[in-house]
Length: 248
Length: 248
Image (tube, rainbow over all chains, first blue to last red; front, side, top):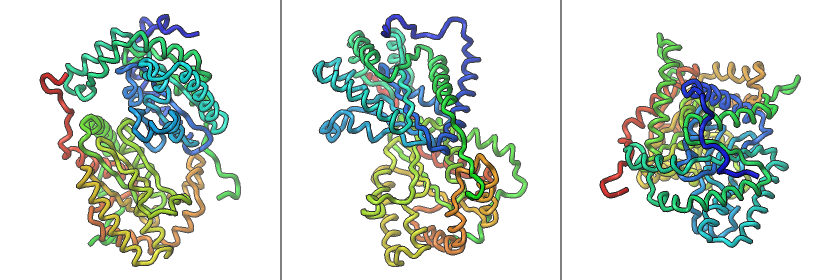
């Protein structure tokens, strides 16, 4: 059982920031190379899920981990407040059609998990419905793995409450970040403890394991996530398909 | 009037390859930075169209020009042989929903132009229908510009017939390129002159001007296209939206 309060949100002591940043750049390049092989081979697909509190760095992680991958090989789907049409369907309706095709990497910035997080915190769903949804999520993720050779990496971006305050304040203080400012984020922050409780429960009831990424320092966050992604891709037996004699 | 046979497919004489490659890398980084401002500002959108003969480098251009842009800010739509459902609709049906949202860059690898190129070469459409389609394309592109503040950059990747043969042969000879080999490309090559004729006509009857990119050398192709994209973005009055007093 995972207890988030027992897991550090920071880099291990003594890690060199500049060296780590350089490593991350190299890893990101290698991810880009492997992504091309994945595309060529059309055998595997990779689904990355980024979930975390506001300002935990979902977009920043996308940029630094996949910033050296051709947009031909990776695409991003951000899940925002559902539209009227989406609300008129089951919660997975808008999600299932976004599953990655063979050969592709898909990044979910927020995901189907929102429907058992924000909705649960505000009690817009009953606990019974939450359990039904968790079962549906586990069944769908299993389907992707078994029926489309998809690897799923779900990252919980683990941010401390103190660091969130600093980052939200930056969005007001730094002009280039003003566009990220949203007064609603400060409102949601008041529900911090309740969010931790529902995240923990979602993580512990998930069949596909979550990866807890310490994100208080951006440089370590990027390195941590990039390393996990690369490790996963290195283990995928990726190779360019080769023409056999007489195939040309 | 553009006469493709009069336009060079190669880099200007005397251009230094290594220096140009380095310049392209810098330009690609700058494009990535401006893409973030575009996303933040949510005022402009950019549609890039890549059209050209097989092996002219549509995917390679995507990778090198936008390889340093976060996948949060750019996405690629490749248009392949239409599905049954798509064939059951007008030719623009599958295209219009792929228009870039405000703040986003969308790359079309092949596009709505296929329906007046490959279909015309093989006489699957009448000349009357071709004219109707050209009118429809001009109307739709005008709509994007006028009604969604979209800038459209259409690149014709101008490849020589000799260079195409070398590049198609590489796909057979080099194992890492085998996956790109498609015997159908050699068949289509037999219609080269007819393709040139319909491309030229499409280009000359377009309201939004085409950019003719010389692509025989990959390094110059990347530089040429990246420069045009950057020049366009630099002229877009992109800026981060700044909070006014009392807005936070």
